[in-house]
Image (cartoon, rainbow, N blue to C red; front, side):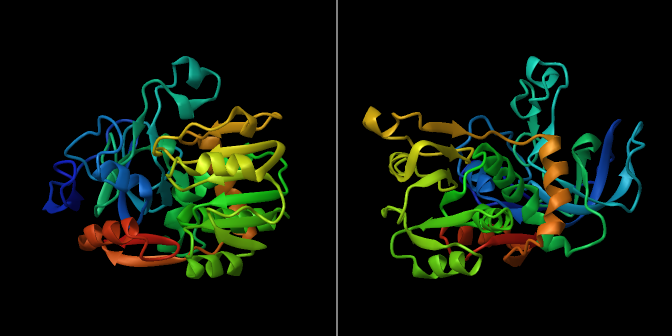
Length: 327
């Protein structure tokens, strides 16, 4: 197998040939057909997440077909197309797992962070965290659903019945969530970098009723806002944009420090919430409803060996939508 490996934090990934790996008990091996490039991969490569396993193969939006089954796997079959997400293993016995909050597991493993991921031609994964994808849809187009889609789905759930929904940072996640929210009958307000008219037009093309800079206030108070941008300075602005009783959901795994702000901006029962990881139920729910919505992912394909270029382009905001590596 071949892979793009991170050998040291802050260094470019290296193209490497490795021995083929065999799945252990309860595991499967996939021949990777596509792997999305997520902002979390940037956090791993740039050392913004604590204690990464290095060397590591990044990548956690994996689509592929099973070519080997480990002992005890009887719910999946050879040749089946599946998706592998960020949360790659949970212990099943800690207090959080016991109450079906496995996204908060005390002893988790994360694909592409603490266990090898999908920037490779093959990957070994826990069979419990492999989502059947069926045969409809293009592999590369499906890949972003495995993280930016799933975390967007979980974040959207945290907003409850909000009708006027603000999305701060209109990247890979927001371009999927906007479509889901519109399908649900919500009104989407898109916030981009100030002056980014191209992304604002992209947001309106996906159903946003308003698009403007993150330094602007929406034309009417929001019921809720989701922050996909990793800029802590946006939290006070989002709190000002939501009505009394409104919610601000922080969707990222990493964010710059949130500055101090007057208690008045939080008062009147506004809520500030974070989202962590996902559960298997999130995956099953979202991947079941996604075909009904008819989500169209805007993707930019890169050969696997050009993973560094994909990461650099993502860091620089060079495209709308999502990057996907093709082995």
